Image (cartoon, rainbow, N blue to C red; front, side, top):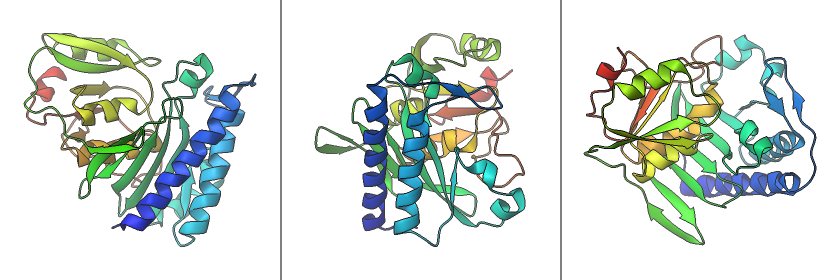
Length: 264
């Protein structure tokens, strides 16, 4: 597990990375594209360097798997790690490019495949969420911290998170089977955090995401009493496969909701 002092150091790192991102957000920046056509900016790289350097300093014994350097790590090497930091330095680069503020810094600690502690920082608003299944979940805003709890029982209209950049036909069909709903468009791992706050109820995702997209948000969600399931109802696990890509999932606040019926 992770002690309070280390949690605070990681929180400070996320805030430093957010400051680095904002320094570029307010300037004219170029947008490149990776081999998978996802966008890459100087902000992604600045946050990556900040976080990797910081984690390497405070926990030199724990390897770091970041979106921006994962290609440098052999699969066999990574699969041998029982404990690692899983990092998305800038989750929601498309939202960053659109300048709509809906992007985050994600840092999660993985132990034996389980995401045990995560930090999600929203650079534009300065709001930060942190937590884990055995730790509870909290949000920090304007110098204040408060504990989080999901909305349970969730009652109609259910508030369902829909990705800003990845809304597809399967997601739309899932939402239509839910009955009375209030769709809310939102980018990045903010969706997990809003469920943890009780502001949203369900986040379905069909199609590829990467493990660093979900791990930190899952920690916050689970700390607040929610869950992240694959279509078979299994909790998400990390660094267990040769690929870093996740499968389909449903994130829930109220875990008694009949989400399997909506998968049909």
